[in-house]
Length: 392
Ligand SMILES: Cc1cc2nc3c(=O)[nH]c(=O)nc-3n(C[C@H](O)[C@H](O)[C@H](O)COP(=O)(O)OP(=O)(O)OC[C@H]3O[C@@H](n4cnc5c(N)ncnc54)[C@H](O)[C@@H]3O)c2cc1C
Image (cartoon, rainbow, N blue to C red; front, side, top):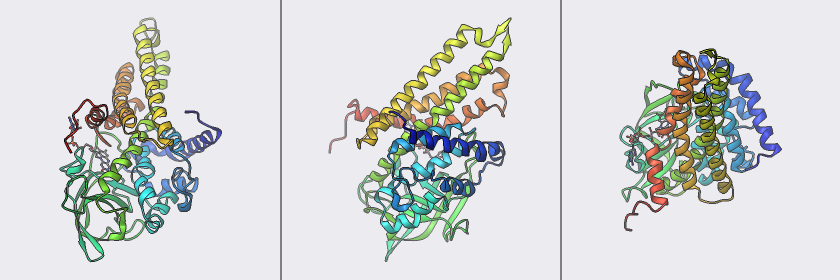
């Protein structure tokens, strides 16, 4: 995949924004365990960065997914994982299905303000009793006149302490678990930054070992009334829409770690060349040279895999297999590279403020969130024909 002048221009705009408006505040946001999503998103919306791949009719730029990938990669210049993840939720996790299958009315109400940066969105799939097993979610939307009445719980929801709406996966019927679900747009507040909608409670802000600047919540829904017209696409198609939506989430997950891991390696090489021991520098040790060279090779193999998946996705192909491989490899390298680098920083790597130690903590989520490594392997075992498919 070749980046054009336009890709580079978008990356330059975003890099300037990160240097001026994000990185100077990251340490304070990490400390506060929250970043001001509305302010940051509004500024990004004004720069046209929140709707690169979304339809022009709703304020997007109508570009193909390679531009989304270029943006995801550049987000790796942010000095933490939490803020990029929150931005990725807005651009690649809670809006793809809405943009593709939502009615015109729904897209005007929820997608256009998300692209403009006037509203913050979140994606509600996981629950206390079901994360990997998406089909096992228990939240229910019961029909009542023209409305759905929603009850249930959603857990681990990124952005949810600030979000204006949730793209929520709920059971809307009784049938087989892959055919009884719908994605429903649920307003969480009675206006931008307003009071919580009646029946919704943010039960808990979850304290985490990493991704600290990103807020993560547990939400309860008790008889929350939403018009049925807030459903995305056809009733019963939610599981399929969500599986398709996961493709962009997984490509995004792979692309967004390329730059941050590269920065981690560069910082470590710089450190190793400076750090003096045994009459030379750390980088004079052949073991250190080989380890760093090997990790860089691993990273370039992830880049090649991710670019290939993106290329085929842009051509309209189903990239479930390659996106799952890229997500799996990204999860693995998000552990291997920060861990390998941290070792060479010695005691300095074990301190809280070290950027490599932050990536070590933040990157650990890569093998769990958005489909754990084992879930990716399960998909691959099926698509590669290793596991037997259940009889129809
Ligand atoms: C910081 C953070 C942010 C998140 N943001 C969101 C969000 O915005 N929206 C949302 O909906 N969810 C979100 N999640 C939830 C995330 O997607 C889930 O945590 C993830 O899917 C795993 O689900 P679980 O935690 O219920 O673990 P479980 O499903 O209980 O799985 C536990 C472990 O079992 C193993 N496992 C799973 N399946 C298999 C298998 N088939 N074979 C062998 N082993 C297996 C894996 O190692 C897995 O880690 C977030 C999570 C975190 C921690």
